[in-house]
Image (cartoon, rainbow, N blue to C red):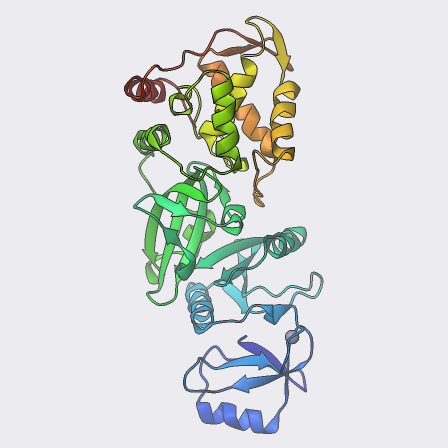
Length: 393
Ligand SMILES: [Zn+2]
């Protein structure tokens, strides 16, 4: 950490302006304590690592459970400099006693408080949720910025996101969502915009890079990047991939999906045109969209045409698959809602493309049978036509 107190409650921040001799003198004449647990900490003025304070021996302090790397310390300092250089009020590592939390930086901007959490090492999802909710409870907007060293890019638009990274997705009015990384080695932000879920880890995202010095604070907190409207093309290549993909070691959902399709005499490669779309709220489901959406379509086919079913029926069907561990859902801390929103949005797409119709607020009827493609070539052509015709998301 970069901040500690002297025994006479003087706040010492290592951020700038210190000569080594000054700090050595200070160290000689004072003892330092951790702002959080009040245990003594030592001031480390080595030549290999950045100067910092650290606890003695085995650490029981809630703040220092994650070892701070130089990468993290440097990034924190750069982010702090970047904010105050824009004449925005900011505090480095303030301890918020009401929630027992210490953000890396607390910012007061445009009448609101923001807690910047620069996260370079993995933390458990429960800790992430606890911290995020702690800030929200105090009406502070948490802004998670992950270390650039954590970004996993698989190809130009394919990324691997951990459950915490998914949980840190912030909703965006036009571009669905955003998520930031910052690399302190090259002083650049990497922002993933409009992330769509392909499976529990994989995301299709639009990457924007920006140099810290050229990026206003506002851009980061609001995700204000101007991007061209995303086209359906990339998503169509994903749908195609699912049609061709051979998985030698299927996971539970894939295994179940194959067997369920087989029971209906359907090849899982020829899953319906109407399934596998990134509808609104689909991110609540971890399971690949072509799987859970096909399962819904097959389930609906058990209702004869023109007979009623309710949202609750479909919800119960998916809920049971989740309870059995076939399908899985994820935590989206910044979103209001629940995986039922993903189901509802999908039913709306099915209404749009005429598979079902709503008869009143709670009831639906199935209007027509799904026409399964007979070959992958046919499926590809029809997928494209579908994407051009209907508003997917
Ligand atoms: Zn401590």
